[in-house]
Image 1 (spheres, rainbow, N blue to C red):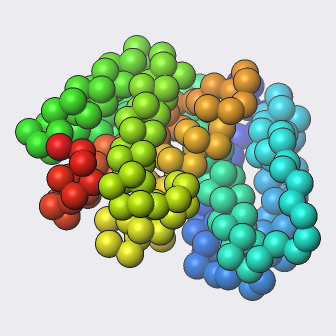
Image 2 (cartoon, rainbow, N blue to C red):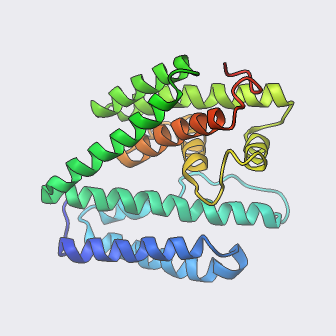
Length: 247
């Protein structure tokens, strides 16, 4: 990556976009759609001006495949698409910011990444006693992450995500992943406003299991791993591991 503007100005602009995204996530799609569209144009322009490979970065913000839908989308689907679009932009902006800091050779990045690894390790150790098989796979995923084997890390974590969702679905006689997430929200195990767990599940299932040639960056691999570990930790804290046939 070659940065074409002052790094401090680039980081400041990214932080402004991230704050705007957080604000938009507090709104309904019909309240925030116009502002989101305007912001998207500004982010596209920023990418092209700030980075030598700006066109590629701009294109990465937009899904490469759009699934056609018949008829008018429901308000619920529109809200889901609105939030997913914002969260996708947030993931990319966070990755760009990290790339800028890495290019500058800032030692704080190593400290930040180390802290994030510790956060993941803490979540994993918290489930080790009750869910040792799951913890073992997540520890393998973390080792792959430390070795910069990002896709391998995401795939190992994804195996845990799929198995966990399948067990919950089967034990509770639920439909697809959306019904499982709705059930977990009702139980207070998943907080949709937090986004960490749902981001992990959607990023893995919607992108890396279906789109050929897609590889996660460090931020996305961490999101997937931490979100999965947090999901299992929350299930355990809620005392539902046996209810869901996980233990």
